[in-house]
Image (cartoon, rainbow, N blue to C red):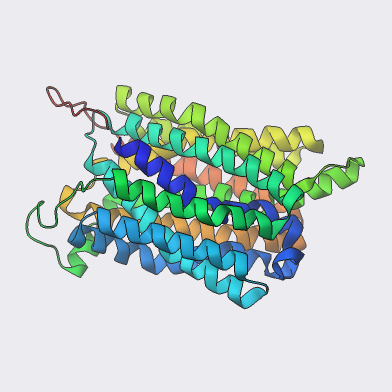
Length: 402
C-alpha cells in the first residue's frame, strides 16, 4: 500500500511540471516567455533543490516522514496554481522556485520511505515496482497533457490539473502512514554528522545519478520538442507538436513501466547492483548515439526509447545500491545528498542542451549526452571492480513487500 500511495501522490504532484516540459518548447508564447528563457524556466527549480534536498533530508530524519511529505504535496498544488496564473517570466520563475521546494520534500521523502519499508533482499524489486507504478501515471500525464494543450490550450489544461494535483495530497493524507519515528534509529545526529552520511561510499552512485539526470531529465527532456520540430520541418510532415512530444515522452515512461520491475528483480536476485547499473548506462550510450547520428522521426523514436530503457534498468539498481550503503538513522540526509547530485545534473542538463541547440546544434547536445552516459558506464565498472554495488541476500530476513 505504501508504494501505491507514493506512486499516486507523486504522479499527481508532477502534473504541472510535466505539462511545462511537454508544452513550453512549442507553446512558450502562451506562457508569456521568450524561447531564450526556456532553459532557465525548465531548470531553475533544480538549482534551489541543490540546497533544499540536504536540508529536507535532515528534516525527514528529525520530524519523521509523513508531515514533511504532505507539506511537499501542498506546495506542489501551490506551484501548479502559479503556472496557471503566471503571464510573464518572473511570476512563472517564482512558481518554479516553489516547485523546487515542493519536489525536494517529495523526492527525498519518497526515497527515504522506500528504504524504510524494504530490506536488501527486496529493495531492488520494490524500488522497481515504485518506478513502474509512478511511470504509469506519467504516461497518462504526457498523453493527456500534450493532447489537452493542443485541444484546450495551455491555460485551460493547467486549470484542469490544479485540482488533480490537490487530490494527490488528499490520497497521501488518507493512506500514507509514518515509517520512521524521530529518534528511533538512535541518538539524533547533528547537522554536520548528517551531511557526513553522504561520504565517499556514495560518491560513485551520486556521480552516476548526476550524469543520468543530466542526460535524460536534462538534455533530452528540454530539447525533445525542438528536435521533433526540426525533424518534422525537414521532412515536411505536419503534426501537432505538443501531442507528438507528449506521446514520445509517454512512450519513454511506458518503457520504464515495463523494464524497471525486471531490472529491480535482477538487482536483488544476483546482488550485483553495479553490473545492472553498467548495463543501463551502456544502453543509454547507444540511445544517445542514435539521436546524434540518426535522421528522421524513426531515429528520434528509437533514440528516445533506448534512453528510456537504459534509465529504467539503471535507476532502481542505483537507488538500491545507495540504500545498501546508508544506515537507517541518516537515511533522510543521505538521500537528500543523493537527490542533490541528481538535481545538479537535471539543472545543468537543460541549460547545456538549450545552449548547444542554439549554437553547435542539437546533435552536439546529444553527442555530449552520449559522453556522459559513457562516463556513467565507466564509473559503474570502476565501482564494481572495487567491490562496491554488491550485496548478499540476507537469510531468514524477509519483510512483506508494501
